[in-house]
Amino acid sequence: MGPIIFAYIGIALMVILSGVGSSLGVTITGNASIGALKKESGAFGNFLVLSALPGTQGLYGFTGYFMLKDFLVPSITWFQAAAIFGAGLAMGTVGLISAIRQGQVCANGITAIGNGHKVFGNTLILAVFPELYAIISLAAVFLIGTSLAA
Image 1 (cartoon, rainbow, N blue to C red):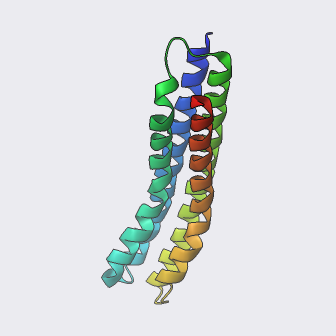
Image 2 (cartoon, rainbow, N blue to C red):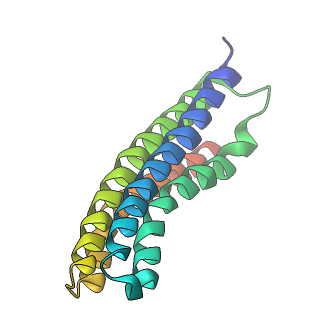
């Protein structure tokens, strides 16, 4: 296995794991929204925003690919490939877990709104915390990419 294959495995982990996490997160929130709509049909806009929030991690994984794609050339070194693999593994793992956990936070808020509680703003604030770690991972991918360019 050459270094280019190792780097592409890291990119694949970043895109696939972040995407899987987002799909699971939005499924969790979508299911909660369907249940809550039966009780509170006028809150669809709130449910839509909270349901879409876990989808951002998948976008971060895809963005990470664009940050590192210029290094995916046949002349890549083992050092560059290892850095890209590590960046991909970190972004993918954090994206997977944070999207699922964010989906659970949002689902609890959706359920509460469906039961008549006014917690949309509170849910958004609490749902930002899992998002923060996905953003930090994307920032790490950016920093790794800039250090490889130097």
